[in-house]
Length: 118
Image 1: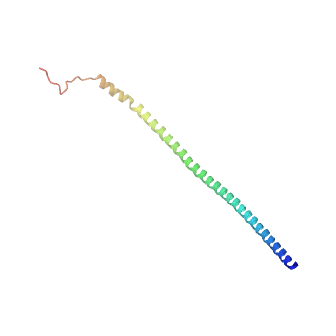
Image 2 (image 1 turned 135 degrees about the vertical axis):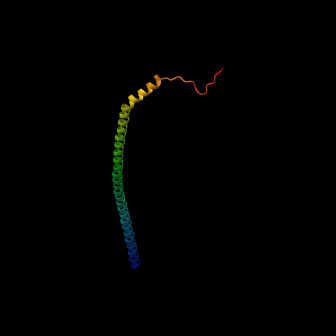
Image 3 (image 1 turned 30 degrees about the vertical axis):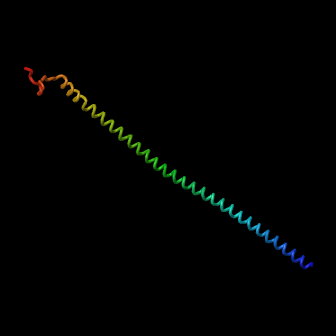
């Protein structure tokens, strides 16, 4: 009987050791999963920061070129306004003379479609 009880005790101890090893393996697996998750999160954050940095760089290049474009447009507009103003001052006197001559020099004529009522 004692050998049977010793055999049972050994089986119980072996079962306990197996259970302990299984629990330890589960803990290690959980720990590895947690570590992998943390590494993945860190990698994602690093990638996100890198992409945001690239986006800001591209955005600043585009916005910078738009700033230059608006400056060029402003310069062209100023130049055109200056040209129109110069043209106005250059031709104003001649145009006014022509208009006044047309108003002052009225030549009365009978219209070609006019019929005598007589």
